[in-house]
Length: 467
Image 1: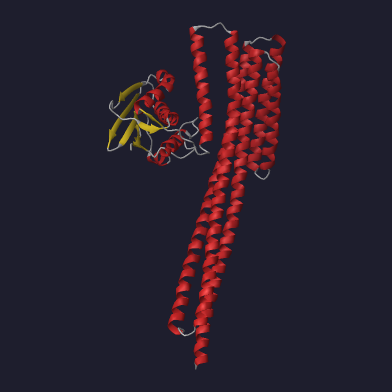
Image 2 (image 1 turned 45 degrees about the vertical axis):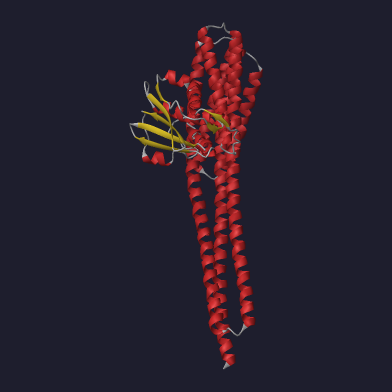
């Protein structure tokens, strides 16, 4: 009778732990399969990023070649021809890389064939202009006509590049969605495993407490088994956390590489622009009008360089240098930086500052950039003769800044994605301005929100807590 009793307990125990083992084994197998799916999708995401990156490189090399070609036309310096030749080599080398990356994509291969012809046409046109100019060293209407044809060829090239990038971005979104779905599945499997382990642990405890209180040795072994089981579950959770963290780091690294590449490709032609301006200044007779234009180009060149730095800052944590400053003075400085745009678009600025507002502790340079991004967005959202309203106030230990425009406004779907990096409603926007502004303001323990209605404009509200 006693033996039968203990056999009954042993059978129940074996069934319980066997069920736990089978369920956890199934969970581990499904987790492994899902993890392999995530790794595969991640590989294709990197493949897509590489294609997009190389397409951007082609556009950049062509732009660099154009800059070198124009530098030669302006200065007759043969050094620019060397730069042009190198950009041409870089373009075709990158094109070959793209061809190998898209060998299994017929649509891309067809687009690349067309793109190759357009690039050949582009460089052939530039080469003809160089040969014609080299013989007479004089800019003629014929040369200008050839340059216009080159601009049209470049637009066609960019059209096919953007077409291929859009196709790859669609694939990227689809693959990212798949990664997210598999990650959710892994998370669910872990939760199920943990619940199963807990339920079976309680089951084991109940069996031993109810039917075998006298069997201390069996309780001890069961307890050791439960501890091992919990340890395995914990190890699985830790491994999954490490996997998620590794994937996030990989995405961050990819973003950083893209940011550094874009920065490199922008600063190269920017350097050519600055060199050309200096050359023009040294060759042309200085007048008030020319100096104003030179100064405007120089200021905007510096602004572009700052935008490149902002792009790099989105991939690393900014170091803040706090000091006491008046929020009114910072807003005035930001408006001064946007003065050219304001005057060009005939924007009316209405200020409603709280003259008794107290100083706050901020990184003046960073906050000035944040305000400037919002002000520039407001200007670009308005037609000529728009009204830009800026107000400051202090209430309940909160310093509040409101920036309002009467521009085209935004839809609800656009508002939902307003601060997402790389999201923009502007044709030539990079989608980093508002994201960078938000990061700066949040870094100051502040907050930023927006209200908008299509056709009626947008209001940004920025709050800083004053201790």
